Length: 501
Ligand SMILES: [Zn+2]
Image 1 (cartoon, protein in one colour):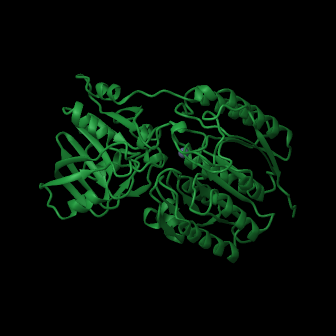
Image 2 (spheres, protein in one colour):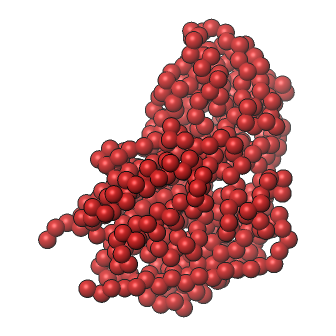
Image 3 (cartoon, protein in one colour):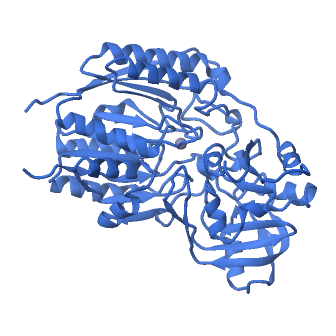
C-alpha cells in the first residue's frame, strides 16, 4: 500500500480596500515545491501546522507553492492567477488523497473579491465531490457561503492576537485525515451578518473571550467537530462583508444549527461592547517618560497598521516624539523607498537630507531632516522569535537605519509589520535600549514583545484607524455600526456528499 499524500499550498495576504498602493508580485515571498515545504516545516504557521501534523501521521505532503505577503493594498490579480495555475496543475496531475490549504482568507485582488473561494471551487471541480478539501484560515477571513459550499471543512484561528496558527493547520489536517478514515462526515452551518468589530477584538478579553469559551464548551460536550468565529478584517469594501460563525457537526445538523445560531446571536448582542476606546499618543508617551521605567513602552500604531493593510509610512508617532518628547530614545519604522534610495549613495556615519514618510498617509506630513545614517543593506532576514510565527523568516528588502535626535528610524522599501522585535534587531536597532518601540500592528505585536516591553495600542490617525463612518465604504454597506440596522442573519447549510467506499 502506498503512503497517503496530501496536496497542500498557501497564499497568504490580507488586503485593505482603501490602501491606494497595489500589491504586486515583488511584495510576495514566493517558494515552490521542496523549497516551500522546507521553509515552513517546523514553523508556528498554518502551513507549518499542516505539514508537521501530516508528516507525523505518516502522510507525504506536496506543497506546490507558497505565496506570502504582508497585509497591504489590493493584490494584482496576476499574482493570484500564477499561484492558482501552479495549484491547478498539481491537482490535475493527481497522486494525492486530500487537499489541505493554508490561506489567509481576507485577500482581495483586482479581479476577485473572494480569491480563496475561487481557488477552492476550481480545485473542487478538478478533484470531484468525494475528495476531502479542508482549509485553515485567519480569524479575520472573509468567509462566504460560496467558499464554504466547495470546501468540506474550514477552520479559523481561535485567538486574537493570533497565537494558534499551527494548531489551525493541525485541525485542518486532522479533519481531512478523519474524513479519509470515514470518521468525520462534516455538516456545516454558517451564520453571516453585516457587522464590524472595532477596537475591542481581543479573544482574551470580554466580550470575545466569553464567546470563545462558550464555543469550546459546546464542542467539548457534544459531537460538534469545530466552531470558528470569523471577525472579518475591517477594511474590506466588498460584497457580503461581515461576521461569520461556522459550526461543523459530525453527521447531524441539529447541533451545528443550534450552536452557530447561539454564537452568532451572542456576537450580535455584544456589538456595542466590541467597539473599544484606546489611549491617545500623549498618554502612551507620558507612560514611556516615567522616570523609574526599566522597560520600553511598545506602541501599536493603530492608525497605520501594516498588520491590517496600512501603508506603513505614517509619521504621526515620529513627529510627536521629535516635537514633544525629544528626550525619549525611540525606534520607529517608516516605509519609504525614496529615502532608502538616497541612503544607498551615502556612507554610514554621513548626514543625509531626507524627506521621510507621509507619501501615502497623507494626513501625516513628511518629516524633513538631516539624518545620520547608521546602517543600510539590500536585504536581511529577520527570523521571528515568536511565540507567534516563531521560527519564520521575513525578508526586509532594501533598508536603511537613520537617526534624528534620539530616534532611530528603520526605513524600508517594503511595508513591514514589526510584529516581532527581531525586525529591529536584524537591522541593528537594539530594542532593549529604547524607551519607545513602535510596531505597525494593533494586537499581534503584543505577543512577541511581551517579554521586552509594556505593550500599548495607541489611537493614532490614519488609514487603519477604526473610523469606518469616515472611510469610503460603498459596496460593503449597509453594515453595523455605520448603518443603524436590525439583526439580519443569513444561515447556510452544507452537507458533504459522503461517497462510501
Ligand atoms: Zn488576522
